[in-house]
Length: 224
Image (cartoon, rainbow, N blue to C red; front, side, top):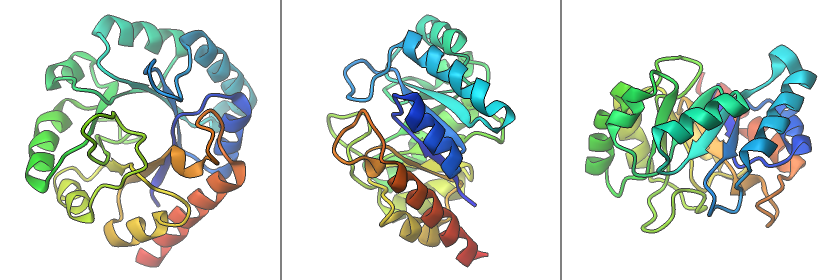
């Protein structure tokens, strides 16, 4: 079954609802210009409360960053006690390698050719922990670092998956279309943020999260 990441969570009730719906990952966004930004101190409090309530059943916590320094990544990783780091900006492959297996890269390729080149350069330095993706594939946008509501093409998804099996797909996924993606491409994981919101990027719709996860998992069972 695909691993599901609910990204851009900013409140404990939404994090708990995502966990109880079956999310394997919760994404915390530390990109200050983004509408889903959470301050590190607030994220640390959320993470501590979530782990206290869920213990071993707590989803893995992923910090989402854009063009931060290694020092800042390390500081927030330690403060929040993150499980993994997602680099969603223009970070070079060398930064992944310098993070010693704690990070993976998000790419937004314009074409299959660019997708394969980016995957080949960034996947080798990504975490080898099989609980996490080796790469996150998002839809291309000229100005935005994800969260656009746009979808990556299936051709790109399939090409990247052939090169990097542990690929998580993001971009425009909703409860209404995630099953189609899973049935067509069977990715290792799927990621959603705006797709489970009702217009407010600071809050998740709990029923939408449940339906998203239900649809993703049901579609994978038809493949088997």
